[in-house]
Length: 352
Image 1: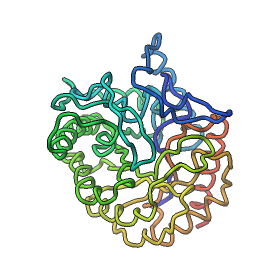
Image 2: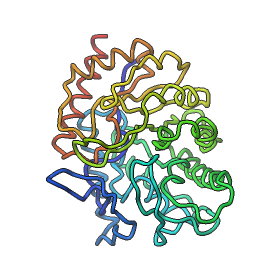
Image 3: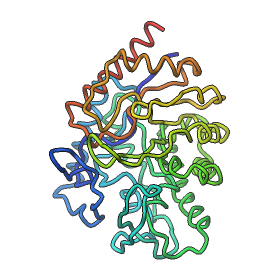
Image 4: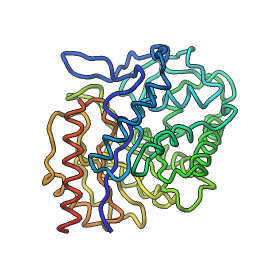
């Protein structure tokens, strides 16, 4: 068995206007003032997205990654895209002020205006097939989890938040079952909000995420992404991250819930990885390179970090990945970081 490599989701640029386009002092920023209506219309959008998906998938495969994504190049934002295309009842034009990510920032978000239901037919599988049809390696498809969708929207209707969560679980479950039916093996829920609210994650977030995968065939690799928060800009200084010490308890719950993989931030967080010893079967996609720093990690540095994880996990339960999506990086820097990561995996597999 060997240590494999993957990415989390987003590539360095998209085919549509997204929330990584604002800059300040030459640094790429997360657009906190970004609004859903700013996505706008892109001429020949479908063709442009198709061409970019093929390019991005090909680049990742040539870099030597074992599991790739479509780069999320057709998405204006990792959860907004799902709301726009797959959810009825959350209004992207009616925006409400909301404190986000446990007080990290304030934004205007889409508003729940009516009972939340799915669009008439599944659609995520079409994006998966578009990417897999041009890929020589397996494609992972990513979706936002129910906790993250709820944190990124304002509930203006439901008296009981749990009812809203159940409706979102049903919507996501339909998409995941359609993905599995169309051959998608690697399916990832993005749930960084679990790290912001670990008590809520343990109370209901983990069980909701597990419910999303109910009915999936055994071969599906059920993955969940849990970074400590996308920073607000390249080379962040004082952005409020989630408490990394919550990883242990949340990962144990995911392990008990039957998840196959959890993607965690480590290059930036530099966790005490001893919590890995408490996991019975959960695999870890270890954040091996930072996603908002100019520093280029060397293969040797990545190997040394991975060796710490391998004190607690067998090789087949460890993958290397970036901490999160690559939207803050230039293509040159992102590819150099991924090169280092792939080189590190080869060293580990050949030497250890």
